[in-house]
Image 1 (tube, rainbow, N blue to C red):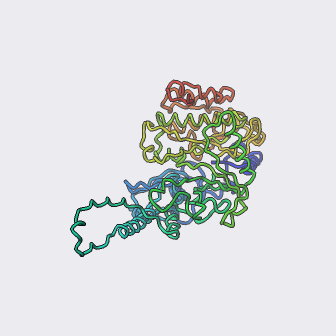
Image 2: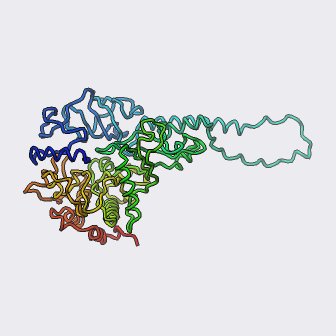
Image 3: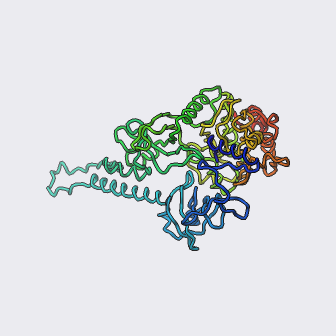
Length: 511
């Protein structure tokens, strides 16, 4: 969860008026009083129930078991944010889609919100399958017409012509390309195009449904570059199955907050042009006041076009149902995170937003295989960092924060009402890096969802316990990063030269 500068001010005001114990990060909509909330058995306050069935977010459908798993909210007995798995679904599996109410065989009903990143949506898969069947039938019909032959002549041929002539081999059937109108229709169903374009001359085609950037106004879209000769069709797609793999997908971040977008663009430029470029996604294009076919976006938003990923590390852990990363996969993720921090710190910047959600896997559509790779033998070579809009020059003040990733020294400043005056140092990111590696190596975050992290880390009896990390060398590295004294945390060079990396033969450096 990300807390913006506006909310940061509100929290500080409440802290000054009441007490440090009253601290709890709140959404941008404002602070909700206890009288307007319900309280569960764990003494955690939850939003009041809304009308309608429970809602499942970040869901995945398991076709082998017929169940849906995800994060639940609006449930009468289960706290918001808990991970649940339904009993087998009674509804037609091929019709399962976002914003749909499904019923289980036990009689329970759930409304499906956004699917998890990288998860397949059965209704979309079914639509794509039918579209391909229609195209295949059309191709087969065209091939049949092309290869049909005229009936042989009944005329008696001269004796000289009676010599047998070896027939030419039949031409290999060619997959027929659909007409332009059919191509548009096929492209829309195959790539889930929304019909909205952004960029000059409709350069990019938005697809699917956007993800809301946590705590911010930005929306994250999947998109495809449009073919200049066939507007509305992704470049490289000609309607054949063989051309689908040639289509390049991108990610577009749209936001009305031009200052934050300008800052992120500047940070990408600065980090990727420094001594160490790190392992961040490639920035493709920055478009202030972006043109769009949507009047709500046209000229009102700024667009940042970046390299697309398949899924983030948080989604990978969720799909593994709490099973941690192991072996080469864990080292690949740790090395990538370390190299990103190296690039940021060598540019005299502090990230302040290092977490599993901000690392995605590029160019690898093997989620199911990686979910089942319990020992991490496949590795994760495509892990890259994203989201640099909160990166701030060292010895400056933060503009927002993530409670679970913030170090104790910041939490003390926050509880004292001095968060806006807190001076950032590189040690801030080293604490965040330790928390991220703890989550990857154990399968769950250090702090339970809903806990008051700032109050916990500031208590007199708080100590860091990393005994659940199975690898001894990694346990030592994480413990160093999570030192309560920021002066004792390693710098990024010490991190990358730790025995966890250099004694394995698959460390963070390539020679």
